Image 1 (cartoon, chains in turn purple, yellow):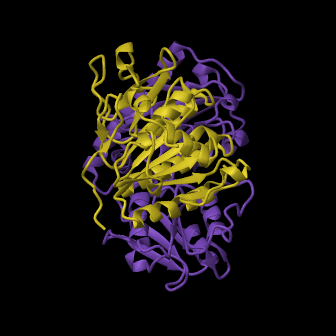
Image 2 (cartoon, chains in turn brown, orange):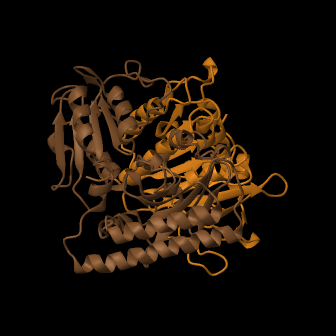
Length: 312
Length: 254
């Protein structure tokens, strides 16, 4: 996997995190040092990081303000707030309506430096601040994603046809074939409207790839996992059914989905048909994989398809 | 400080597991919410003198939770137990100073984490080798914050437990939660203990994951994250009465 990248915001000697040199046990990791909220935000505009370590008091704002920003622009990023300030002084509800969740290390405790390094390691390696569960084979799954060239025009034509077949069969206006990358859901092909990528925590497919078989959400407003999902509301999605596109070795890379703007039922036969379409997509993936092995210069799909935010 | 990293965390009597490795997270739920809380409390308090305990108390005030802990254990050394009282209960009688921190808003998850972290370091600085973390309960947190925020919080805590080689115990009251919510939370944990009502006010428990040989011939799940909705040991033979001997034989301290 790629090296760990930590964004360290604060200055040595402040009440903030321990010196950046000690943040990483991984010699191959990289620490990006910034001293202000503005500089940190600028960095986050350009790239994703694995972990944000920030002081509370910053020259142009606070660490909690920065954590709130991270949760908006790249919500899966691990965040660690470091300070010797009391909770009375730290505004833990800096942004009403947004519940901040982050690790905290009090910097005047004797083991602070060790604890921060420990938490950086785990937070980055295990991505333990995502708001959704990860598949048990997530690392292998992401590695498999990197082995395929999803820009292949033949592959894209094939999956576009699958979305057409799905829409016609289920009599819906919208269907899609998707990839679930490290941090985003990408729409490889859409029947109906073209949709832009979304974060994984706004994606139903991120739950679909956890399960064998088909995931059906007959009425999204009745499902507590998705009822308040802004992305789904904006698109007017009320019904969802998705089947995983799984490699021969059992790694779910994406999904074939159908959607409706009204709640509806989905029969066993419907599920079987959707699984057939997902199996067809998986067959195409297998062919792609064989072709990629013959073409070692194949590209990293996450760099190409997610606008620079899904991967690094 | 040298931490006792290799030894297993011992489980209380009556469960089909003697102990688990450091860095393990367990969800305790099932049809009986009251039973789940009791079993989880016994699990959180089952450590020896070298183990600290940090309890997040969102269901009831911190002092009430400690009283219950006294009931189920027959007494314990208060110096090794810390409580983050995030119940939001405005009762001065519930406030206490020793190893107790209060949060007025149960939905203030960053505030809870800050107080948790401070208590945790206090216990470690006192020389306690490792810590059992108990969340009572995830359901109460969900009553005050949305599922996404609580999921992130639980995931973060399970990650910390792994990082520090501790034991995480998370209570979910299934009567308060949709099955899909329970499944989502359960996936952050390595195994599950289901608790149901037995006869004569007793409880029965079954363990899923955590190396328990399943009934019915399937292999137990390995790796991180119990398979949500898995029915390993789903038959009646998987359920065991939770021993109340320990509790009955002990007397609550005056």
